[in-house]
Length: 257
Image (cartoon, rainbow, N blue to C red; front, side):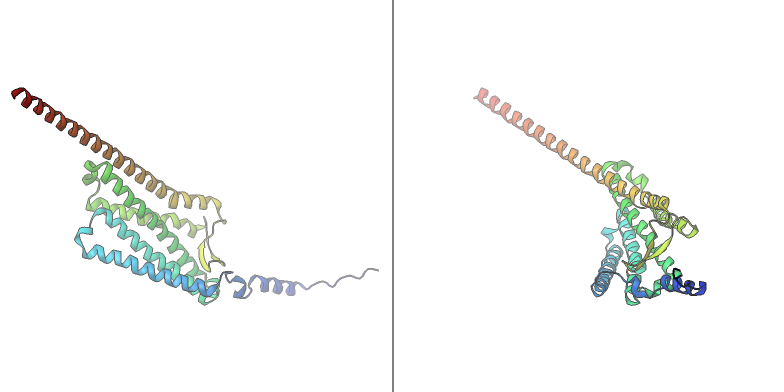
């Protein structure tokens, strides 16, 4: 008669499963060199904070830098500071606690991921707005003063920050989610929980601003090249006209003589 293997009690099986799913934080530690990762994050956060703060201070101090286009650059700097606070600082916390704090505390994980995702969108949209400002200024300079006024620029900034918030907002209502990334040791928007939201996030958060940036720079380059050609043609025409005038005068003097 074959020997039957002893069955595991249900309670013991549940305890074993729980032990696996709630393992120690070492299981969630990033495979990269953590001391190097920590120092790199600290240096990146300090450099970003100092650089973006200098941009804001320069905008406040120097009146020549106060233009509608530079307002969007300052807005980008503010968004980048928020990215550093909500992103880099929580990465430092994740490394310092070996992931335990963010794993065991879902609320800070979700809040940091939500803010970081929203302000990243604001940063990209602000860069796109600055490029669009440059495009209108170069290619449609007559309409520039009508489009960009203190009221319209304020409205544009409100749209940019609202876009970052509303694009990320569905993750709080079940379309998309936030989870701890064991490699980065930080909480991020889960890319595979809802693929449809991932496409939506890519198109609205990155795709549209990047297309705006590419279009604006392309049109600026083409307009500048066309202007240079016109200037060169105009310069050659004036040179030929001057040469013709000189030759006619020389002919007149020769006839007089």
